[in-house]
Image 1 (spheres, rainbow, N blue to C red):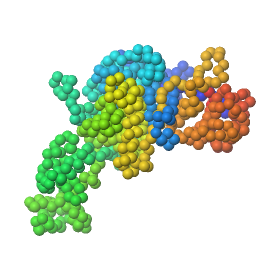
Image 2 (cartoon, one colour):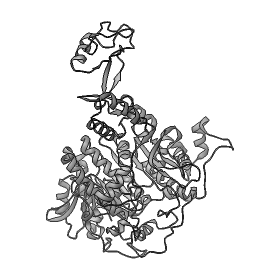
Image 3 (cartoon, one colour):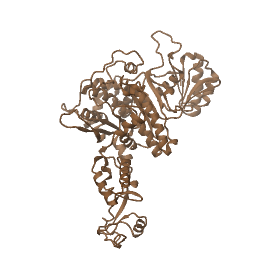
Image 4 (tube, rainbow, N blue to C red):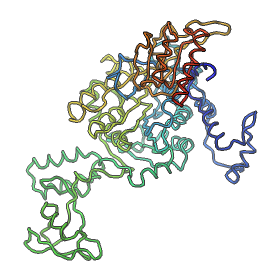
Length: 629
């Protein structure tokens, strides 16, 4: 450590990061002027496509969209403890801001860390398009939308295919960078942009990483068409790296709970209360499972005191158990299947004693009972059906957080349940925060420890809407209140919720809190007057690539007030009065990073700081990153 470097105040430069990876793979292609593409072609050999004719997906503005994703952000995320729940302990984030800028700002802290992304972007159905990439200052556009600055006639003209592509392309490029190598992204979309979504995702994630398109039946029809009433939507599924994902799940396939299981079980109980016989209930269930919502329960038509079950074959094996079993209904031995029973005599006796054999009165072969409660998991199906009405009622009546066309909680729960139990789940079109609700609910029910990051632009509520009448100014307020109400509901309904994280930290997108001095100007204090020290601490965490949920404490070292992050991952010195004894006290905790305001340092103190933390490096064998702003 020879001198104190200035802190880099922009987000991760994706181009620089990719160039560094190329430098590791092909060091010989780099020259003083950049990259020698002729050498690169030689290195790639037969993999280079020299043909003039090739398929390409393009639209007006594509190159600008690419450049937009590559331009670093100089913004920041400001902490809002007053809007948060369980600020000190929660591992969840709710970020109010324009998602393109937020995705850029998250790159250092969460690059390659997100296991699952779910988004439900605008469907391009002709409504107002609040996301605009035509602004040279996207943070200002966001602040105007949030009514935090005087508006200057924002563009809200109807969206078209080009604008939708320009919206999604840079965001998906950045989203891919956040995904872990074993991560996956799920994108809900309808017919309007399905084709373009496939093309964009094939290009960004790679066609080889395409997993499936889920068709989601809805119980509502869209009658805009003159010919066909559309009652479905899609969910595209892509891996970050399909080979890594396949290797990870070679012995542990993706699994979800059967669709609408609670509703199906409730239907059975309702039929039982009607006094129907077992045979009559079976016939009713056969009819019920013809409906798409209950196709997962085909053959689960029978029940006993243990619950619902389907009949399973006990034969189909060569050289099986040839011993017949006694049928208590016919008081005779039942026939033995060709090849014998698949279960050994001891196992068969245990099944009979436990009442797990289904006997018939017509001479049919006996079958084993496959109970629904023991077979709840299944591979996710490419066709799913969910009822949206309960979600609408919950938001409008129970939570009093009205929201048009909310995402279906049961569907999102199913998607989130695929992820690792300790995954970080990102939704950067958060809406009413259904994804966060699903994460909290699953954590409480299954004892999981998933965390969420929600990103939502504060789109204003229409003046005469139900939400506006209830006092909500924008969608973010609806989402945050929904999460508070959801946490209370989960706590009252789930016994394991007391151990779950039901909180969330709120952050807001804003300009950097560090003032840039004009040429020739000496700025004594670079902190903007409207910013708190906590604002600066979190901005430094972002720029240094630390997670925003790490613990931050204000403490005194040698009588000097400073901020420590994660017990020494970062120490921030922002107050006047910094002295050598304070630096010595900081050195004792062996920090990984130290930030100091340049305005509180003189040349002598800078020199001492370099020497003090160089001794820490020698003692610990690791670098201490010392920076000033």
